[in-house]
Amino acid sequence: MSIEENISEIKKTLPKNITLIAVSKTKSVEFIDEAYNTGIRDFGENKVQELIDKIDKLPNDINWHFIGHLQTNKVKYLVGKVSLIHSLDSVKLLNEIEKQYKKNNLTANVLIEINIGKEDSKSGIFVEHLDELISACETCEHVKVKGLMAIIPKGHENVCRKHFGQMKSIWDTLKSKSFNNLSMEYLSMGMTEDYELAIKEGSNMIRIGTGIFGLR
Image 1 (cartoon, rainbow, N blue to C red):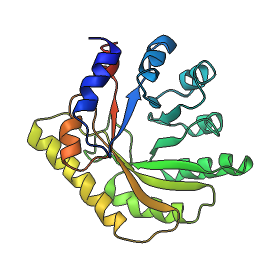
Image 2: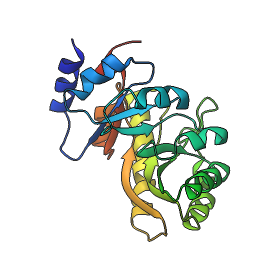
Image 3: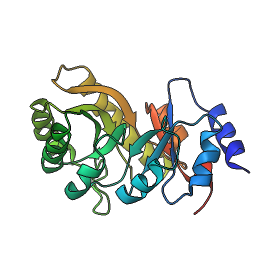
Image 4: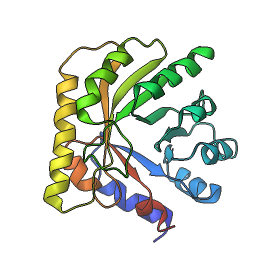
């Protein structure tokens, strides 16, 4: 199927409150244009240089999402370029985002990435360190936390459901409390293979690459 057909099929399965991010990493400008022409405005990239290279070649009303692991020395390149950083996972990174956005008198919108499965191969903060990071976020002037993100371990449906459920429970708990600079607007979880299950468990932002653009 074409990119247009893939997007049409996915949209048929989505409730109205879901933000669909087309994960365009490694994809050409032509492919992104094709998705853009179907009405998609949210695109996700996981490498800073690739994102910067694409921005100037594509329409300026695209909402760019940085969804990859973010190194502190690359933060400065994202300032003023992305609508949402999905991968805040340490106080060190938070401090660098605050510093770089302060220089430009701008505000960074971010999601805290949680390593819910405690996998060595994935970035993200462990749940037991979440309070420390939130406390640091509350002191910032140029960083606003808009929710949570997770990439769950691959597994059977029951395992996936458990991890999605744990994320939703954390999100709900934080949503019920009042914090400075932190609001639970987005729960970003679910990809091509598991987004329908993620939505059932409470996700309101999904990241789909292969399901839209096909295999690399």
